[in-house]
Length: 293
Image 1 (cartoon, one colour):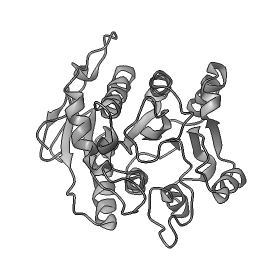
Image 2 (cartoon, one colour; image 1 turned 120 degrees about the horizontal axis):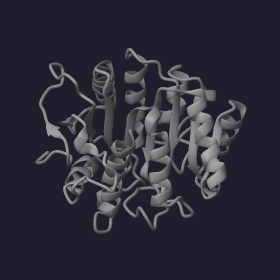
Image 3 (cartoon, helix red, strand yellow; image 1 turned 135 degrees about the vertical axis):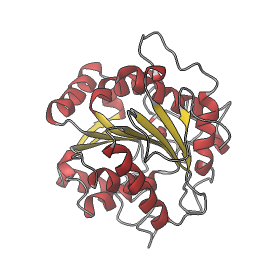
Image 4 (cartoon, helix red, strand yellow; image 1 turned 90 degrees about the vertical axis):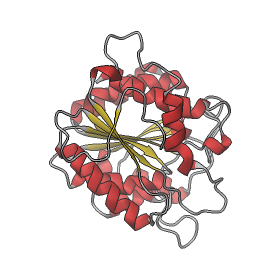
C-alpha cells in the first residue's frame, strides 16, 4: 500500500491506539472460481487511490476529517481462506473492543465470514446483518463441492450460529442469477428482503430501514458494490442489470449510519472498471458513512 485512505492516518498497529473512531482494513482476498473475472484482490489499493481524488469534505459540516480514523493497511495477498478468516476475525474484534468501527475493504464477499466471527466474539452484541447486494449468497455449494465461496458465505455465517436468520435483512436483491434453494431458504427462515425494484419506492425503502433501526441497535452492514446497476458500477465480477442507483445507495447508507458498528464494501473489481468509477463510488460511500454518523 502506497497511500492511506483520504482523511485517515496510516498506522502499523492499533493495540496502543486510544480515542479511535474507526479503523480501515484492506482484505485483498479472492476466491479461486474460474468463471469469475479476477481482480477484486486489487480493490483495497484502488479504493484508497480513488479516495485521494476527493477532499473528503461534502456540504455537511461533519465529515471524515472530524473523526480519528486510522488506516491499518492490507492483509497479505498469499493468505489461505482459513488464515484470512482468523486474522480478520481478530482484527475486527480488536477494533470493536476499542469502541471503534471496522471499515473493511474487500476482496470478494467470502471475507464476510471472518468479519462476522470477529463481531460476535467482541464485547458488543451483533443485533442484525444488513446484506446490501444483488445476490443472496445462500447457496450450500457453489460451484459444486465448494462451500467457501462468495456465493455460499452467508449460509456459512448462519450455520455457524453467528446470527439468527430472522435478523438478516437484504437490500437490492434482483436478477436471474439466484438459486431456487436460496430463495426457498430465505423464505423458510423469515428473512426480510427489500428488492432492487422496491428500493425505488421511497416509502417502502424508508419503512424497511425504520423497522431495522426500531428493532436493532448494533448493525453489521455488508455492502457488495454489485447492488448498484452496472451503469453506475461497471467494475464488478457479477453484474446484474436493474440495480439501484448511486444516490439510492447513499441515502440507504445515510439512514443506517447511526446504527452501524461494522461496515464493509466488497466485490469492486478494478480490472473491469471504467475510469475507476466503481472504486470512486466505494470511496464515496465511506465518506457518506462518516458524514452521517
